[in-house]
Image (cartoon, rainbow, N blue to C red; front, top):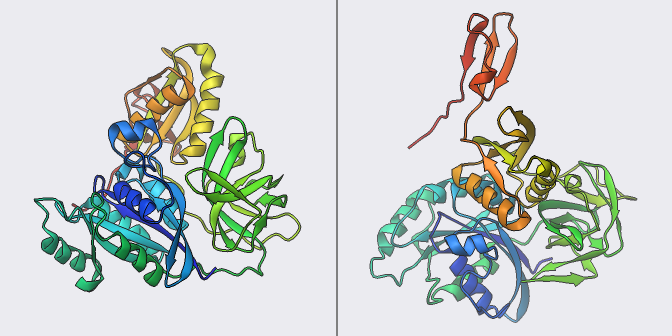
Length: 405
């Protein structure tokens, strides 16, 4: 356990964290880089040049004649996927804060940094893209010192393109980030931070073992859903899944137990043993708050059940998507979905089409209003047609946002 380091990379969109991750994988000889942004494995991510989904991968690194296991989680930078970042942070003890030498500190840099500080992560600041002709590393260094109050010597200058500074980053990860604090003797507690649907093997659960250990063939229980399973296969995350006999304390890995129903896995849930359960679940990350609501309807009304199954499978992979059934006079039966933003909505629509062959109609995004009548009753209205008679309305509340710019 002393030789395990779990860390994530946080940054604003386009500050080069996926490219920096490539260089680390190359330097530690984890994989041969055949194309750029190896961890962005969705076609959509490659086309748009953005990270949508956080990806975990394990590297082996030798320092001072000792072998270290580094679990790296690459995260998205766009604000619409910030829920992914909060899940990654929950599975780590440290974070690389990457800032672009040509852009300086930007909005998501700060908001992701606050998330990491709230979870008590060790922060390693990195200035990336110092090989660019318009880089201003000295000015950016001052901005970072102002932001987190570190010493200028603590900031590592690097380039994701040329690989400069990568050895220093890996050394800093080993020296500065603490090993996971957990107790192998306690009952098993593992935090589910992600899940993937595989049509042959059922649902693959990604988790971090906080206490105890999990072996192949163990009888396990999911605390929130109270369902029991057998761990058919456990292992670690290289570029592909790599089976092992046991996941030890502090490790990040996966568990396959032949779960077929999407609703049985909740991100943020705790896995424990059936015969020696833990006393309480791990406090995960806060519930997600959707910002944009829109109706999603199948083009062919007979596809309603297929659309429900597709949304459930997509929700496994993207826990920030929420949906509930609704009907419309014009479009028939469909779902009212909650998204974190407009880009998130666009990506979900595109993924439904590509991954599940679902052709859908999406209504114009809207917000919900709370309508209070004169008797003191309250009703949530999504559509002007749902408003009661104006003589019955006492007052209407609309959502507001408090922002600091």
